[in-house]
Image (cartoon, rainbow, N blue to C red; front, side):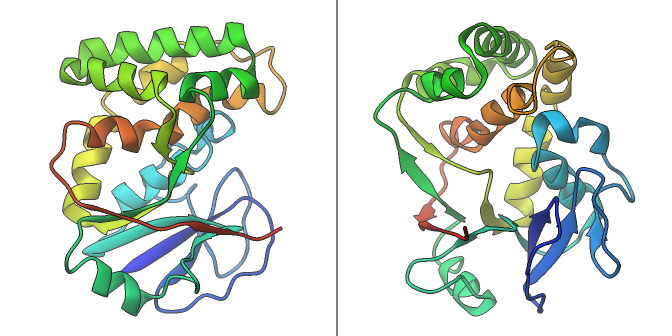
Length: 222
């Protein structure tokens, strides 16, 4: 089992037999893994953020149980998630995810982060590509975007089988979406509009799955 911690800058991390640093976005550090090595989509990092790390984990690792965290975000329900606790949880649950419920819709949250026009353009591209490549998920996409609940930050711990199924689904349409959204004129945060949608994709996919989720809050390191 391994939890890959996405790093786009130098930050404190204690690597052990569970947590492993994974550099993205052109950042490298000796002794740390890099999502620019092996099979990768690092050229998309400025637009889909930690999702390039997700792709790297999918294509370049072999652990039977696997997770993704951020350099300043970890699963923590009183203490930071350990390998032993994750293993115990996954004996009776399919996944560990972090829930959030907003006071407004998921789509409006993206609008606030990237602007109404750009969010609308990206929403249209996501819906078109999902309708073409994964038509059984159009209704799920609409429900999640109109709702106020999601599993956020793209973070998870789950089995390789579930990770493979999710990534096969996600990457069947995602890069076509990103290629179709013009962000050449955008600032740093607006450029990440597709990355904001990516955060909600676990929630969309799970709408049509029969899986048990163990919900755990996040520790945020300031």
